[in-house]
Image 1: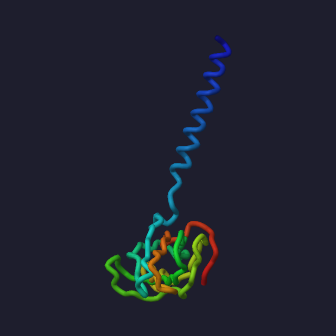
Image 2 (image 1 turned 180 degrees about the horizontal axis):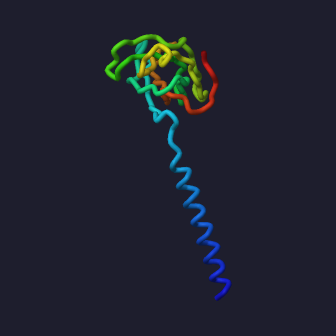
Image 3 (image 1 turned 120 degrees about the horizontal axis):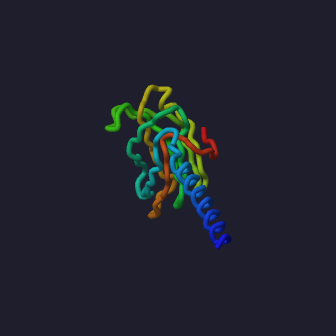
Length: 145
């Protein structure tokens, strides 16, 4: 009986530590309060844009191509989510699939509060390029200036 009580107490202690630890990890908030957005870009057109996303700080923009042909990415800035202004705020960079990239940009430095990506096809094809992007960087990756 004493061994069962001891095992029960140990199990209860481990379980409570696990729950407490999980709860503390669950409370981690993104520093910039933005989330990854997943897109699929058709390489049958010359170029396109993502939708606008709120830009909270002067960090780089994260891009992570998942699959498909390599395309060019350029960061643009604007004042409102409706897209007033559409000003180029980065160099055009080509990022291969599987490379987590941080694109240097000047969205906040130019006074804009929204960012989006212009996507340019390198080679026209019937394949889509799938990628994830985030307007405020939270992870270290390969820097593209």
